[in-house]
Image (tube, rainbow, N blue to C red):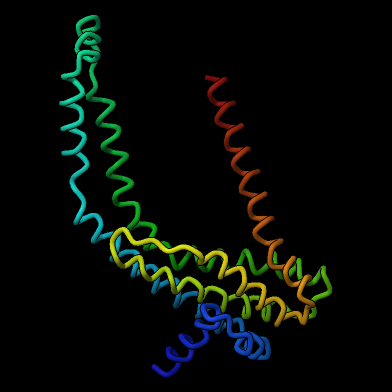
Amino acid sequence: MESLTYLFRLSTAGLFLDTDTFRSQRDNPAALRDGFLVVLLVGIAVGVASFIGSLLTVLSSPDPQAIFTIVQRELERTPFITELQRGNPAFDLTPIFTLLTQFAVFLRWGGLIDAVLTPFLYLLGWLIYGVIAHLAARSLGGEGSLAQTLGCTALASGANWLAVVQIVPFAQVAGTTILGLIGCYLGLRAAHNLPAWRAFWAALIGPMVLVVLLMLIGCGALAVLVAIAQGS
């Protein structure tokens, strides 16, 4: 229980932007291990809150199949659809609304799947960002090790404590990304003893690289789909 309390206090450094905690984490011989546990703790807490909120949302929301059944029935009574079916008896809205219903059901339960994956996504994002930010910080004259970089940037995940509000159905929170980036800036500056502007750019290079990579992956996937469509 004492170690859990310690990890919770450590994680709040990213929420309250406690520079002293970032500096002490830099000199912590177990910075990498503690950073991993901090990200995991926040991820599990947010995942559980999101799961409960998503489940309550599903239970309190109307059945999408019933909604689309009513919409389809009313749409089929409109003069436009009536004339369309008269000219083309084979025309049927049922396949379209069946597809819409399946998609709505997937979205309805998709929040539960995302909630389960939250801790893993947090850990993966932390590792990818940490490695890129470490390389950026070192190229800008940083002195810290990879373990120090990961240990300090892990504290920035404490900004995601705000996302626990998702336990309330339909509740959303804004600002966690900006607060997390500020935490990463403080972490990189502490881990590498960087001046303010160099730490600022080291903190931003990671997201910029990730955006470029996602754009390249998206363009590649679109090119593959176009090639498949043209080949068929």
